[in-house]
Amino acid sequence: MARLSLFNSPFLLGFDEFEQTVDRIAKASADGYPPYNIEQTGANALRIVLAVAGFTMDDLTVTVEGRQLIVRGRQTEREDRVFLHRGIAARQFQRTFMLAEGIEVESAALENGLLGIDLARPAVEEAVRSVPIRPGKNTTGGKIPTTPAETIDADPAER
Image 1: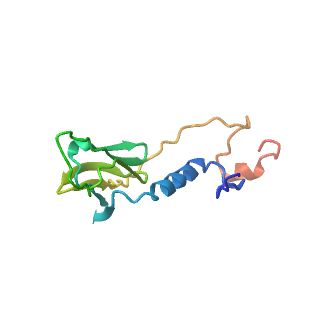
Image 2 (image 1 turned 135 degrees about the horizontal axis):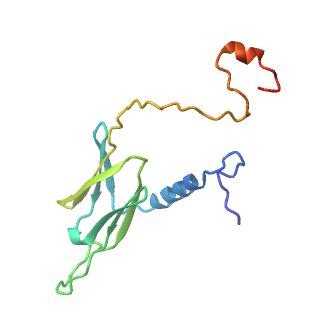
Image 3 (image 1 turned 60 degrees about the vertical axis):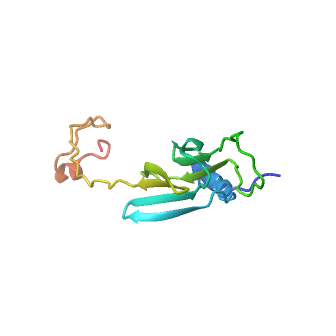
Protein backbone atom coordinates (compact mmCIF):
# COMPACT_ATOMS: atom_id res chain seq x y z
CA MET A 1 0.00 0.00 0.00
CA ALA A 2 1.34 3.41 -0.94
CA ARG A 3 2.13 5.78 1.90
CA LEU A 4 0.08 8.98 1.99
CA SER A 5 2.26 12.03 2.30
CA LEU A 6 1.24 15.47 3.51
CA PHE A 7 3.87 16.95 1.23
CA ASN A 8 2.59 15.30 -1.96
CA SER A 9 1.48 18.57 -3.53
CA PRO A 10 3.42 19.89 -6.54
CA PHE A 11 3.45 23.27 -4.76
CA LEU A 12 5.54 21.88 -1.87
CA LEU A 13 8.81 21.20 -3.65
CA GLY A 14 11.94 20.75 -1.57
CA PHE A 15 10.17 19.82 1.69
CA ASP A 16 11.59 16.27 1.74
CA GLU A 17 13.86 17.00 4.69
CA PHE A 18 10.96 18.46 6.65
CA GLU A 19 8.86 15.37 5.95
CA GLN A 20 11.69 13.11 7.16
CA THR A 21 11.94 15.18 10.35
CA VAL A 22 8.22 14.77 11.02
CA ASP A 23 8.56 11.00 10.49
CA ARG A 24 11.49 10.80 12.94
CA ILE A 25 9.57 12.76 15.56
CA ALA A 26 6.54 10.47 15.20
CA LYS A 27 8.71 7.36 15.66
CA ALA A 28 10.63 8.80 18.61
CA SER A 29 7.51 9.84 20.51
CA ALA A 30 6.10 6.29 20.44
CA ASP A 31 8.54 5.00 23.10
CA GLY A 32 8.02 6.39 26.60
CA TYR A 33 11.27 5.18 28.19
CA PRO A 34 13.03 6.84 29.85
CA PRO A 35 10.62 9.51 31.07
CA TYR A 36 11.85 13.09 30.71
CA ASN A 37 11.04 16.72 31.45
CA ILE A 38 11.87 19.80 29.43
CA GLU A 39 12.34 22.95 31.49
CA GLN A 40 12.87 26.55 30.43
CA THR A 41 15.75 27.81 32.55
CA GLY A 42 16.18 31.23 30.97
CA ALA A 43 15.06 33.44 28.09
CA ASN A 44 17.22 31.46 25.65
CA ALA A 45 17.98 28.36 27.71
CA LEU A 46 16.38 24.93 28.12
CA ARG A 47 17.15 21.83 30.16
CA ILE A 48 16.14 18.29 29.30
CA VAL A 49 16.06 16.01 32.36
CA LEU A 50 15.85 12.24 31.83
CA ALA A 51 15.14 9.77 34.64
CA VAL A 52 17.94 7.21 34.24
CA ALA A 53 17.98 5.50 37.62
CA GLY A 54 20.50 2.67 37.76
CA PHE A 55 22.67 4.02 34.93
CA THR A 56 26.20 5.25 35.54
CA MET A 57 28.07 7.83 33.49
CA ASP A 58 29.85 4.98 31.68
CA ASP A 59 26.46 3.52 30.67
CA LEU A 60 25.25 6.74 29.01
CA THR A 61 26.24 8.61 25.85
CA VAL A 62 25.01 11.98 24.65
CA THR A 63 25.73 12.85 21.02
CA VAL A 64 24.63 15.48 18.53
CA GLU A 65 24.22 14.27 14.95
CA GLY A 66 23.16 17.04 12.62
CA ARG A 67 20.17 18.63 14.35
CA GLN A 68 19.41 15.59 16.50
CA LEU A 69 20.33 15.18 20.15
CA ILE A 70 20.64 11.46 20.84
CA VAL A 71 20.85 10.02 24.35
CA ARG A 72 21.72 6.31 24.57
CA GLY A 73 21.85 4.12 27.62
CA ARG A 74 23.18 0.59 27.89
CA GLN A 75 23.82 -1.07 31.23
CA THR A 76 26.52 -3.70 31.43
CA GLU A 77 25.63 -6.75 33.46
CA ARG A 78 27.95 -7.49 36.35
CA GLU A 79 28.34 -11.20 36.93
CA ASP A 80 29.04 -10.81 40.64
CA ARG A 81 25.39 -9.81 41.30
CA VAL A 82 22.82 -12.46 42.22
CA PHE A 83 19.21 -11.26 42.10
CA LEU A 84 16.54 -12.85 44.32
CA HIS A 85 13.99 -10.52 42.71
CA ARG A 86 14.58 -8.23 39.75
CA GLY A 87 12.03 -5.42 39.52
CA ILE A 88 14.28 -2.73 38.03
CA ALA A 89 14.71 -3.30 34.33
CA ALA A 90 18.22 -3.04 32.95
CA ARG A 91 17.14 -2.31 29.43
CA GLN A 92 18.93 -0.22 26.87
CA PHE A 93 17.34 2.86 25.37
CA GLN A 94 17.78 5.55 22.77
CA ARG A 95 15.95 8.85 23.11
CA THR A 96 16.11 11.36 20.26
CA PHE A 97 15.28 15.08 20.38
CA MET A 98 15.10 17.26 17.26
CA LEU A 99 16.92 20.55 17.76
CA ALA A 100 15.82 23.77 16.11
CA GLU A 101 18.30 25.69 14.01
CA GLY A 102 20.72 27.56 16.26
CA ILE A 103 20.16 25.47 19.42
CA GLU A 104 23.45 24.32 20.96
CA VAL A 105 24.07 21.63 23.57
CA GLU A 106 26.13 23.22 26.32
CA SER A 107 26.59 20.46 28.90
CA ALA A 108 25.29 17.24 30.43
CA ALA A 109 25.43 16.14 34.07
CA LEU A 110 24.27 13.04 35.95
CA GLU A 111 23.05 13.56 39.51
CA ASN A 112 20.82 11.35 41.70
CA GLY A 113 19.61 9.25 38.77
CA LEU A 114 18.70 12.28 36.65
CA LEU A 115 20.59 13.19 33.50
CA GLY A 116 20.36 16.93 32.87
CA ILE A 117 21.25 18.30 29.43
CA ASP A 118 21.51 22.06 29.10
CA LEU A 119 20.67 23.69 25.76
CA ALA A 120 21.01 27.30 24.69
CA ARG A 121 20.13 29.48 21.76
CA PRO A 122 22.88 32.11 21.60
CA ALA A 123 21.57 35.61 21.17
CA VAL A 124 21.99 36.75 17.60
CA GLU A 125 23.72 40.07 17.33
CA GLU A 126 21.77 42.44 15.17
CA ALA A 127 24.53 43.83 13.00
CA VAL A 128 24.14 46.46 10.34
CA ARG A 129 26.40 45.72 7.44
CA SER A 130 27.19 48.03 4.58
CA VAL A 131 27.20 46.51 1.10
CA PRO A 132 29.59 48.25 -1.26
CA ILE A 133 28.23 49.23 -4.66
CA ARG A 134 30.59 48.70 -7.57
CA PRO A 135 30.20 49.75 -11.16
CA GLY A 136 28.47 47.07 -13.14
CA LYS A 137 28.34 46.09 -16.76
CA ASN A 138 25.11 46.95 -18.56
CA THR A 139 23.63 43.69 -19.81
CA THR A 140 21.89 45.39 -22.76
CA GLY A 141 25.14 46.72 -24.14
CA GLY A 142 23.96 50.34 -24.15
CA LYS A 143 24.60 53.29 -21.91
CA ILE A 144 23.20 53.12 -18.37
CA PRO A 145 20.90 56.13 -17.82
CA THR A 146 22.18 58.46 -15.13
CA THR A 147 19.23 60.86 -14.93
CA PRO A 148 15.46 60.37 -15.14
CA ALA A 149 15.37 62.50 -18.33
CA GLU A 150 17.76 60.12 -20.11
CA THR A 151 15.50 57.20 -19.17
CA ILE A 152 12.40 58.91 -20.65
CA ASP A 153 14.13 60.24 -23.79
CA ALA A 154 15.90 57.00 -24.58
CA ASP A 155 14.92 55.10 -27.69
CA PRO A 156 12.80 52.01 -26.76
CA ALA A 157 15.19 49.81 -28.72
CA GLU A 158 18.04 51.01 -26.47
CA ARG A 159 16.19 50.30 -23.20
